[in-house]
Image (cartoon, rainbow, N blue to C red; front, side, top):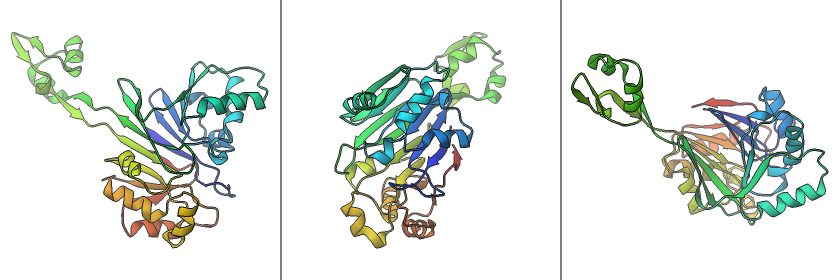
Length: 296
């Protein structure tokens, strides 16, 4: 599981920061959170093929979060893309995607599906689930969480102790099924252990609200906007954003393990003030940079 921060600025890009986009690589899945202007070029610079994208999760339809979509879709449609791209977003996403295809002429249509994410779990498979909860930003806005499911792992030392050969028996034990070997019944707990899944939370473009805590609850990694420092809390509330200190408050109260700040106002030439602002409340915090990678 690896996160690549492709864009970390807010509305206005800078020389160092593109508009917001975060890519999660997980096995055969590639989940893109938001798609600011220039995102496809950021993929190229990062050395990640666009064909790795399987899902796009849009927080809302302000331009700095979606202006990269037309170009990305156009490029994908010209490539050997064998997947069906799934695009999720808040209520109104289907209509806005239809309008986008009316506005632009695409020579070739990509195989894709547009879905409006429901509150709570909106995607679920054997490996992970995706959750969405509404935020407060003046328009329909969602925060997301990626929740990896717990996995049963084989303890090879215990397997050797029981003398169980490699093959179907070990496979059944890993699936949580008891087996019989040499006349003895062996329970899954005798030779396996549970590895707890990871949780990644993504919150951007909102004032502080109850669902911020719900999304971030027990997250291994919380990615949260810090558009302004607490010195500009009035401006932050006026434009529907959070301060770095508020992001830290969410991380602290929600019992998150690590906080990564993102979506910075272009007024900040460096992020030292924002990081210090958050560190007053939550110590394990860093400010994201474009092309920064985090492995979990």
